[in-house]
Length: 331
Image 1: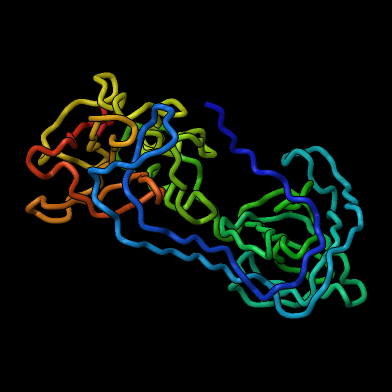
Image 2: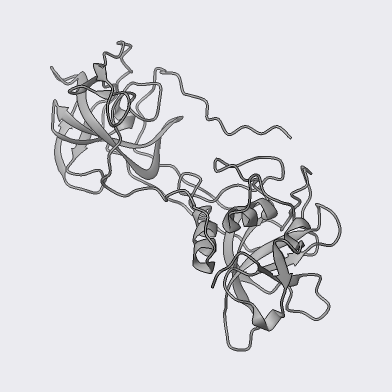
């Protein structure tokens, strides 16, 4: 299979000023489906239907009112080599394109305003930035999106959404990224504990710009793992990319069978029967009650994506879902 995770760079374009908007992720109802063997379609007809779920992560932009078109001036960067690779020797100079953008006290659009910039005001047609912060919260203006805010030193000192800058990328080229403000989740690291596996599983709930990773039997996510159920579990367990398939997860070199009532955090419930349209795997997190009538699990399900929800797979007599314990757990 050929997969691509490259995000095309945006070209600088003339942009109309729109009301303040933000990125939003909308979940839809779907059925479980999984393959991990190169299939491209199908869903698990045996799995329960999921209820509708909606999630909207709206991050207000630092925009006030007015209208302007993007400037076409070329970037003038003074750069040098150093700790950050190519970085600003003093401060990088960038054209601004909007009007009445709020400059904030910190790299958070909810922090107090320390001033405004307005391209139509003398001296405000360009900004100088000495570093930038990846807030991990994507905001969009039209078709342009960014997670970055820049620390600017002129014409006002403070933090400004990079969306206010007329550049072809979602971050400022040649300007070092520093810590500060909310940070995106760190990429999952290999580990042998149950807590580490569950932490890795949780990263896909917000890895897609604050939303869930979409389901696909054919695509590869940015971390190198296939975007179906077995690719997801392979990621959580730190198995080699792009991940084994559902049947492979039952192999004696990866897991061993256990009793349902012995399930512990990080264990798996696997339906390895049938084909890529019917197989599925979920990662057990915890029992929801002492009677063990339901549990909470992590899964990557068809027509939906990453989910963290109550499930009963494998609890009914004769169920094709069987419990397994990853051998790599050290606790």
